[in-house]
Image (cartoon, rainbow, N blue to C red; front, side):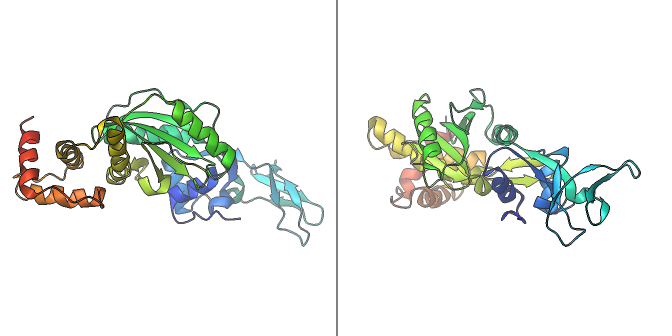
Length: 292
């Protein structure tokens, strides 16, 4: 069966990893020359792994498995069919690729470091789960734990992941990057969640992450954490947070003209249920932030 993600390399990778680490045939992803296969291979997210062991014979009318073997005459591969004899195998169909959570976790961790700077904490498997703790980054000046997880639609795995998240040392915020659904997971307080195919993309031969999407995922949970620690944060903290994010994304106007309006518009995106502070208040906080 062709995975649903054909046409979108990251969605395709999520389909492949939904069941965990595995070895797949090129045929399952549209062949070695399919754009998605090329993109994932060049980004190092899938790696060649010889050829598959068996295939469905297409040389006769019977549906049967056939073992792939080396063809001594051609130097290629073939299988033996009881009716058709030796059948030459199409290498584009029988080539195998390996996919693994650890390989993806390393690529996502590298992409986060490229976007948000130095990572704190060593990447590791998250306790007795199939998830990976990628590290801690300063996202919008918030110290944020990032975890990559799959299989969260299953209640048992979702519960194991939740308990492992609760055992992690406290930071300002957290982000669970998900592969597949997360219906079974109730994220702990201060933890946001976002699907991998919503925050990551391939450009050239590199996996990259969308800083703006991640910022907007984490921001509300950061301020939930601040509320829990000491009541409602003042406007100064929130305006500083927005300015820092705009600066990281290269969206601050050089002259400063109109910046208060930009901050107020960004405010309504991040806090849609809160009225933004008055322009004069925003300008005062901007002046303090610029003088830091």
